[in-house]
Image (tube, rainbow, N blue to C red; front, side, top):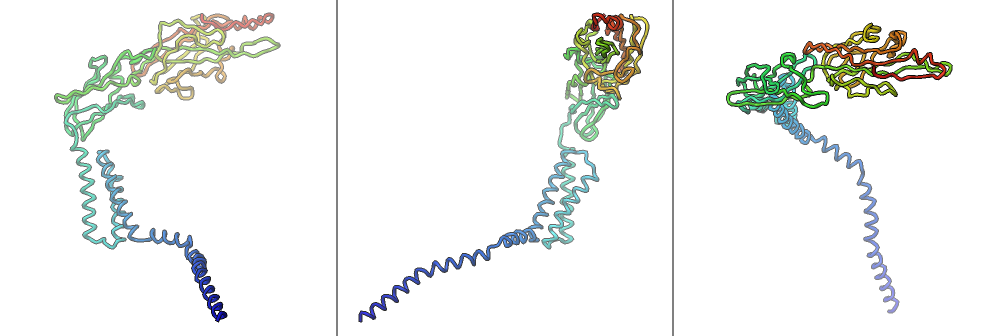
Length: 400
């Protein structure tokens, strides 16, 4: 009897152990099976299936078409004056995207085509019409700029199509130019030769505003003013100053003067200021003229003792402050081309020790005013310096 009980207990214990171990084995076996089915290729394939889904692509194309139409319509409204060919292509492209989306959905038919094209045209036309209808009956000044190529002021006026106006340019509150006109569609641009309105520079040699130019436009009871940027109204130079750098060499321990490099600055200057040099290097010690972007020609010649001409530079033509092949006179000092390279060689001009005057003649294109600045007078002692070998005297250039 006890033997049967022991056998029964052993069977019960074995069953309990198997029952306890069975779920764990099932879990262990299930995990690799799940891992076998979870493959990155499945994820990639799912993404590709979504992207390849015609309904998703169709929806994206329709969205692109509708958003594109709204953007193009806004640009038509904002720009007002549009290039019909360019905007026609843009409208066709946005409609094409929408229509192709409809085709992928299987919903494109003759009615859908006619309806969508009508919507595209009506919305574009409404944007264009609104751009001209929305606005004020008065005329306002949008901007004033200077055209370097034509030497003209360009004045842009805004207003409703057909509105009449009278526009004037004032110099220190006095009319110097007037014209009447009508607004075209929503704006009109007037070109005014600078020579017709220029009365004098807005800035002086200290860069202070000394005169004011304004645009005044009158339409009915409405008056609008705009002060022109002073930087646009400086078109007459009155000063030309030079500074030098002495070029020397050394022979047997003595300094020999080979010539000099000459730099020129042209602009708005104080014509009453005395000429002065830094004796250590020959550079200009005074306040140089303020360079401006304008049109003029420059003729420079060197005189010995203010009488005989010993050297003449080739004429330099300056357009908007720039002389081709020479430099930017509208920015700063410009190194002049010499007799050899950038050096004015001693044997090209040097007569004897004494005072050399650099006469700078400027012809202003806008006003026709001719300015001759002869203040650049430099005392040179090169012969004396080079012959004094005992003390090797090297007297620096000074103002005469």
